[in-house]
Length: 126
Image 1 (cartoon, rainbow, N blue to C red):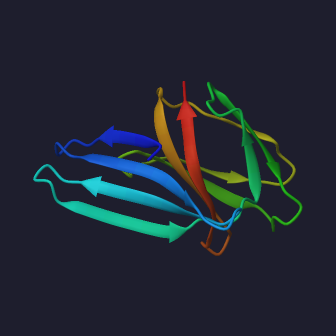
Image 2 (tube, rainbow, N blue to C red; image 1 turned 60 degrees about the vertical axis):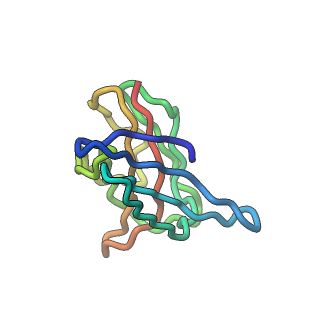
């Protein structure tokens, strides 16, 4: 597990990656409830279509579309409780976006215009 975050209910969320037959990987999320119950979700990680830097980020996040990326996509950033805190359309003719978020760990989804998840990952704001 790469991160453990407490949740308001007294439990925690743990997140990590499971690599097999590199570069294939899956994302693993485990929710530990306050009563000790465990919920586990594992799903295949979509391939990278956009690279982001720097990570950790302070106020401006830069990105590059990889050649295999198709069209614009929407970046959704969620806090570690799953609450959507930022949603922004990323265009091929742009290369950065403002990040006005408090210091914390965040998860992101990149979705196509049709709503298909293309990439997921973790973002650290410092």
